[in-house]
Length: 398
Image 1 (cartoon, rainbow, N blue to C red):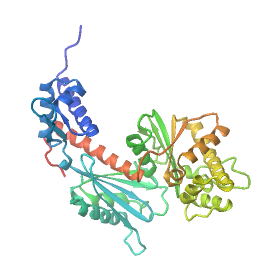
Image 2 (image 1 turned 30 degrees about the horizontal axis):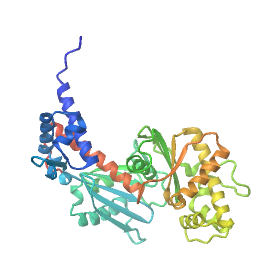
Image 3 (image 1 turned 180 degrees about the horizontal axis):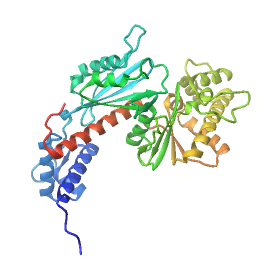
């Protein structure tokens, strides 16, 4: 005999249906009531009540009508972008970039501030400055932002609310720095995350890892990093330091090379030095890699092979611990090498490891950390507004 439903079940079912419809509108764009019925299996009266609830809450609005079919045109509904605004900020030692978007994920503005020696380098001051510049372009004041995700090239310790293992960012590791940031950006919710972890968020949402059970992002740029996604959840470690592979000791380094850690082997200075050794002239590591991968002369081939071997020596350690289904090569050094470098790394990894994950180049366009930061802000705000709408209409929220 089936147990009678508990009093909470109808409400829970409504919430699940509402969230399913909202997610479909975010993924597919404007939909009619009939299309929502077809996609969810809901009846027309249920779909009508659902859309009315979301419209009353300010999360959904009518944006037009369909045309071309027999009978009356159907009203099309979409997520109401102006219901809230969010921001993403990517912090590096030399520049800070801010991006502002509405609730539907439409990017309204992006601004970059170059950090000069004469600037006030307090994190709170710099962040308010770049967000004000972006907000002026978007027509959104900083105090009207619902959530802001900050991407930092270091570890974020949640328990201490502090950025650690950060180099070249004056003031960011100081006690109380993030408390001052939150005060300067109030009343927005301020989220802080490692930049490579955010690159993994971007790969899961928009890149090559959308269908991966688990994967790792190997970030190779000026510095190095590793993000670990286990079934859609980031593994951050006890203090946020999981994936700080730049400090990882390297065994079995190429003959004549004596690195103390992985950065000494494949960090930007090491890649530039390797390029010079093979007679390749370039101003930056990515330029050297791109130039060599596009050429077919013996020196370029030798450079790419040695770089691939160095990357594989670190990946052999990483894959033996994590055994991921997929490793995504990201960061400007790896991206510059594209599929040519990925194939060489795959071949070199087979020589030194019995574990053979798929290797793919990042599928995220632009700045992966900024893309991931915006995705995190949108997720946080949509969840917050949806929870609020379950209790009462939220109207036009920040």
